Image 1 (cartoon, rainbow, N blue to C red):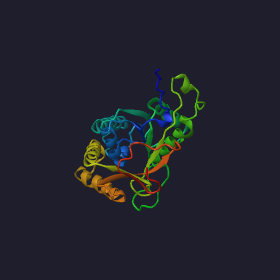
Image 2: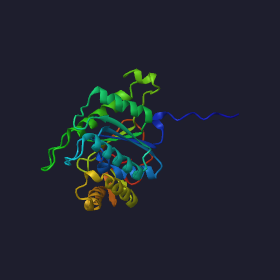
Image 3: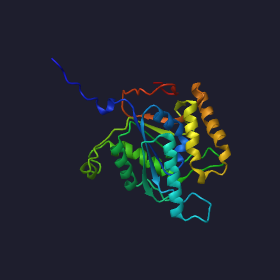
Image 4: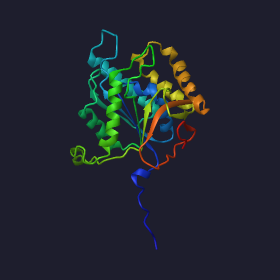
Length: 264
């Protein structure tokens, strides 16, 4: 007598898909590209979701907004190839005007339900005034807030915007959210190998229009990640605030990872 194997419930799937939601080209590559490189190396499908059109971040008066947007989208595409991304979703909201509206949230819900990530990374939705030389970009806060609201409750609840169901986009529960913290305020550090940092450096170097000192990229990227690595006795790491949204589920990808609140 044979028995048919039962499908694994979505809540118990082994982690193999991730998504990063951010405002501008290069936001993700500064904050979490080592982690993305690691996951791609391990065979994960990773999707970037860029909320704005990247049309404002320059001091070059010879460029129009349209020209800059084209340049920066190509740079992000090139960086994605370096990392090994599955794809990039360009939402094309105007750069510099991003707000955590229902319209933005709906677009993020749409791509979450389309790609069904187990882990979603996004930017910190709160302004950090602990630094004396940086006050944060409002688009970063908006992207982070919209992404968190999309994860919970909107992507989860099938009755939230039922038009998505008619498009074949059923509800999806993201297992975990990791908020990029650049080390400070982190509760979780993801250990990286040398090859992951090399890929991250290559990704950042793709954003040539944004690099005033490209010769220092190696030094910056290695310094930040080596400092984070000290928290878990690893050569390199990236820091996040981690939220586990599926109770009782322990991810399989916990190799050399640390958590100051609870270790996997």
